[in-house]
Image: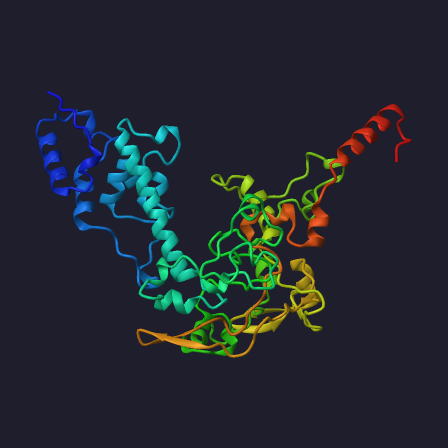
Length: 427
């Protein structure tokens, strides 16, 4: 006979009952039972995960969560499909039930719930450990994040004094002024602000124009040429400068594609009149959504700018194809080699304005010394990337550049009408 087993959610926190029900179900279920087929996971695997408890948050980079779970966890959250894809380099949560679209939903509602909840758990682990190991704020919050504040663990803190609006900000009084906790409200949260304040309602200054860039590595490693510790010195060996090897050489070597017919490619410009016979060879990426390229280009216009008009260094740094490393030795590139690579050795750019370059303060925790910020900091003249400043602007000048007069549409329609009625006369 067949035994229909219902996976009641109230048993999720009771591993012994889950295991008992699983044993009873299997005992009375035939081999052809639909429950033990591909669409349904073994509740024993769920029971194992519950009995072992939650995975602890990593205390070092080596043990950080990489988006991969144990086989029992994968089977509990996504069945054999999730298990089969554990050997791929991608994260496991995208293979759970109800995470891949309509066809990934399970017959059993509770299985889909497990898939969704499991993916949220994985994302939370990734978020927490990403902040811990890959986000180092230069504004001065690191000490409280590492040491905690008033008995509260640093990871649980929600507000930071370094991200309060200063008294000279016109919205200082609106968010609470000198109150212990500033809070954005009213129009500041109903509409986007030009300078990016109040993107975080509890930390009004976060991500706004004029804030310091954070780092994705420990502060001691940000300027290896300063040799602040053994790790920074040994990690780069004798190659300390970010411009060695020359970044243009790296780009040309890695991204230049050989062409089977260079004339038809025409350096990427194609043929006159958009001839369909033009062709530039490239390696197809079957899993890449073409919209990603447009999205990335769109986003980079909003990520950062650390040049300050009138403050940047008067000197320029080279960024062209001037040198390359051959057998570990920096070697000048000949004009012929540069031409073959298609780069320009004379290219130079302004050096970014350094906001603060004095020696940073330090603090200690668990016998280790930390820097409170990077040896050099840079100010972002743009807003944080998430608020769409590439569309709306981030200061008066950029807003004027992107602002559109509603009457412009009427003007364009009149111009189009004039062009249609009197060809060649419209200006």
